[in-house]
Length: 124
Image (cartoon, rainbow, N blue to C red; front, side, top):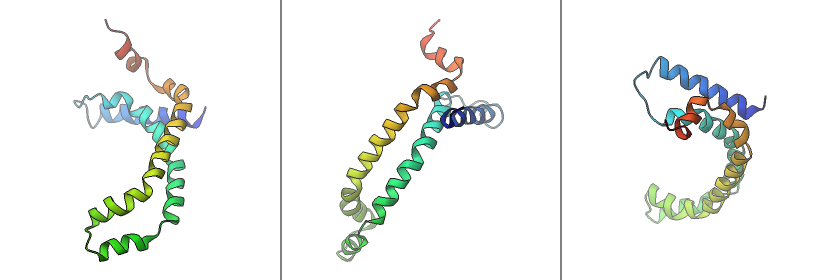
């Protein structure tokens, strides 16, 4: 069994337990995709986190400090200094995560139960 499939099954079991015990009357569309979302996030998040560590390791904190010295609020410092510097990397991480997730789509789609797949395609 591949790791994403095992993770997807684990999230499916956790989702079922939550709906049977803690949230029995809370029916939303998110419960249908929790197993797949959890599988894809737990598969792509470590790779993306390692890339973000590399990005922030070479980040020059003096730029943020200079913005704060010039009177920028924390939000302005983030919006006008930090975000423009890391935005290309964040877009690249999103594309990399999408590529990793797309590659595992066939395996993790097996974790969806027949109820979930039939709910959208079997109208009747």
